[in-house]
Each structure stands twice: as C-alpha cells, then as structure tokens.
Length: 167
Image 1 (cartoon, one colour):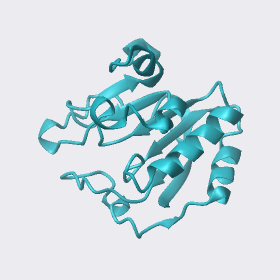
Image 2 (cartoon, rainbow, N blue to C red):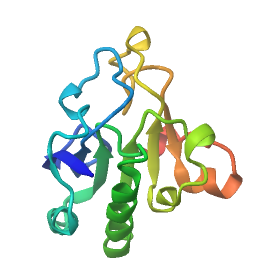
Image 3 (tube, one colour):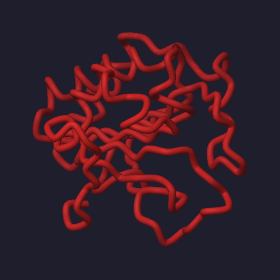
Image 4 (cartoon, rainbow, N blue to C red):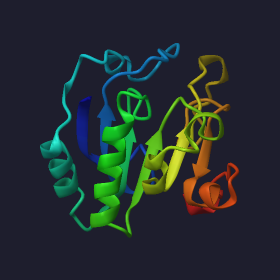
C-alpha cells in the first residue's frame, strides 16, 4: 500500500483544522477528479508503521480536530487494511477527535461488513459525478455523494446522514 501526501494543516476536508492523508491508488478514475495524481497504485510513497507514527504525531497538537483520509481510494481492497490500521491507531490515541474518510464505494452496498468502519466517525461515500458537481455542497463535490454518520449507521444497520448542525 502507498500514500500520496500528508497535509499537516488542512481546513477544507472536514470540520476544523485537520491532518489529512491522501492514499495512493484509485480504480474509479472519476471524470475531472480533483486529485488524479493519486490514481496510480504504484505512485506515491510506501505506507509504513512510520507513516502511521508521523500522522499520529502531527495530530497531537491541541488545535487539530481530527484526521481526514482521502485519495485516491482509501477503501479500495489494496488500501483498506492500511486505512483500518491508521484509523484504529488514531482513535486509540485520540478518542475525542474525529476520523473522516472519502470513498467512491457505497457504505450500504460495499462497506457495511468492513472492520475499518468501526474506527471512522464520518464517511463521504459515492463516486464524484462531474455532471452533478455543485461547489456549494459541504464536504462533497457532487450531489449524489452522502455525508454519513458511521456510528449511527452501524448501530441502526442502515445509512444515517450526518445532521448538518454537527458539521
């Protein structure tokens, strides 16, 4: 597994100031993807235990609200185990901070049985669709995408959209 880049202060991918990691590799190749340099699974840098340690260290600052995991495709079968390991380590160290993940997969169709979900607070699911692009949307690029409260979704066994006032 590989990653493309780490942003130590990101204010555009989730609420508050966050640390963001962009996983490397995506099979969706959405038209006009905002991050096409992350598509190649062989690009970027190797994702190791040192990568996890670096991300956790960057998240230690009090003003960091949480961790955002994007791509590429963090929930692709090649990447999901690394995403799970990172999210789990993060939640163990920072239980009061949030993990947000962006994925082209659909939670209810593709991800409900994945262990990684246990460590994610919010997931934005669905592939970006350029024809449904709307720059006024919060946390997503196209109107087909959903901002999902993962804890409620797992508890109720059905997709629960995050209440707007929580973000």
